[in-house]
Structure formats: structure tokens, C-alpha cells
Length: 437
Image (cartoon, helix red, strand yellow):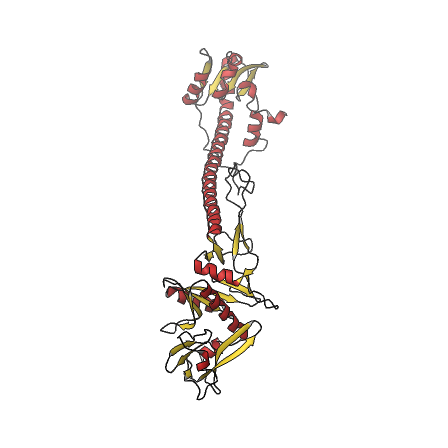
């Protein structure tokens, strides 16, 4: 069954309209003899007008005469459900003040619309497609692209239970109640449900690996709307109060989804998109700052550990020369402590007859707090530079001797220590008295 045919005298006719779309009477071609000169616009086979009732529908359509050849128009019009849906789509478009024609084809046959709805001023055309048979996502996307190339909007309608392409193109799912009541849109239209943290400046959700407060990027999501009448939907398409939208905020299960929405829901999603963008920018800046801080801290710790290691090397290198120096000065062999201790500004104490006599390489920054204790002692340094650092912090009359020694090269990150020697970590613990806790 098809709706549109060609009359030998009147041209194109539409069997669904009481005036056949050309100002003529159905009775003039219905069951007349000789048969009316009606042919198919596709295969040019003879047609005849048929009248049937189907529930609340009073149906008028055209049927090919017997032995008709293969015909795209006849195949496209097969099925009562397909037939009724096209009737509904055209009826609702006309009720919205638009014109609606069946089976309108492109001049080059690149597309054929089940119902082509055209606005009163002719500036908009919308193809209303009843897609009741199975079709691949690739094919329906290609057909949608051909409409777009012709500057024609499109909406695909289907009553199929499983619709793999519903997310891929502007489309909706319908249901026709068995009691003959109004056809309903059951899927394909969506509403945005916004959700925000109470304090938008401090998001309650994960901070994505950074420390500190991040602004709320919004936690709203899209949801399918409750079923509503097909007529309301077609009217909204014609009024341009609903339009297909590629969702930018994905649901938890899906992304890259097409849905029909209103301007209000677009604005709610837009607000969340902007907030999410801002949150990401803040997070990136905060993450960069915190990474720089971590890098600086790590560099400072490396420098500190290197300084401690260098101090240990100087103290070790000076131990024997200092013992010889004091022996020649005091006439007795002194005893040097095993390592630096806080009481002597982390320097190595040297004892003569059990009494403190000297300190090897004290840490200059620790000297001011111990000036009175260190004043009677001899301080030893490994270089003039080290001597100057100590002198700048020590008592003005402090005695400081420089014993130039050859120091070993800088130790590797994980030096091989002699058995019984202190590691850097152990030296740090001892420096701060942590090994005595």
C-alpha cells in the first residue's frame, strides 16, 4: 500500500486527503469504470484506490494492481503499523499548521521521506521517518547525513523493542496502546537533572589527586522523560521548542548520545559544562603548583642530604689530621668522638684527658646557640670558606683552625659505606636526636 500516486490528468494525488491534494473528489476515482488513470510514481504500474477501516482509523490508500514489478515505493509502504504511523505523523504536522506530503523523494533519488513536513514560510523542512524494519547504525547514519546535506532536518520514529541506533541519530521510540488510545513517545526524549554541592566553592566529591578545595563541576545527568503523546512531540518539532542534541554530559552508562531536548535542559547542561571546565582548569593549576612544591621539596631534601654527606666526609677526612695537630699542641694523644652530636653543633668533639678540647667541622648555623659552650674550644674547618661561615656565627674571639685536606669526590646517591659507618639517614637521625627517643 502507498499513499501517493500519479493521475493521468490531475498529476500527483494524495489518497489520505479528502481532496486528494489536488482539489478533486475521492469518489471520482473510487471503484469507477473504466478505472481511473492512476499509476505509481516509482514503477508506473497501475494503482487503484482502496478504502478500509482499522480501529479508529478511516483508511484511504493506493494499492498496486496484480503482477506489479519490484517497486521501491511499494516496499517502503508495506505494513499496517508503518502505514498508520505515517498517517499520524502527517496529521500532527498539519495540525501544527505545516504542510505534510508523503513519500517525497530527492531529484537525484538520494533520499525519500515517508512524510516531508514543511513550515508555512518554507524555511524549514523536516523528514518524519517511520522506520519500522531493522536497519544498521551505519545505514541510518548515512541516510541522516544525506538529509543534512540537503538542509533537511530529520527525526526517525520506530516501534521496535530493541533499537541499537536510538543513540546514534535524532530518533524516538513510540508505542501504540492496544486500546487504541493516543500513540506515546516512550524513549528518545530526555531531561537534564541538575545536582550541585551545597558549597559550590568546595566540592564534596573526589578531588582527583590534588590537595585542597576544588569548585563543584556539577553532578547532574540526563534521564529519559516519562511517556507523552506523539502529537505533542511533533508539534514541538514544528514549533522548534524541541530539537536533537548531542549530549555533552554523558550518563553513567553511555556517552555520545543523541536526544531530543528543550532549550531549558540545554541551558542546565551548559551551566554544568562551563562549571566542569572551570573545575578542570583550577585542578590543573593546583596540580601544577603542588607538583612544583613537591619537586622543590625533593630538591631541597636532596641538597640537605648532600650537605650532610659532605659534612660527614669532611669530618672523617679531618679526624686523623686533627688528632695529630692536638698531639703536637697538647703533648698527649686526644680522643675523637665517633660522630657529630647536637651538643657540639653537630661537629665531632675531641677530648684531651677526658675534657672537651676541640670540635671538628661544626655546622655554622648551629653555632650561635652554643657560643658560650664552644668559646673555650678550638674549632677545625676543612677550608677557608668553611672557616668564614663558622666565624660569622661564632664568638668574635673564637679560635678556628683550617686544616686543608684532600676530600673524596661527591658520594653517589646510594654510597657504599664501610662496615659500622653511619648512613646519611642515621646521621640525620642522630643530628636531630631521633636515635635517642
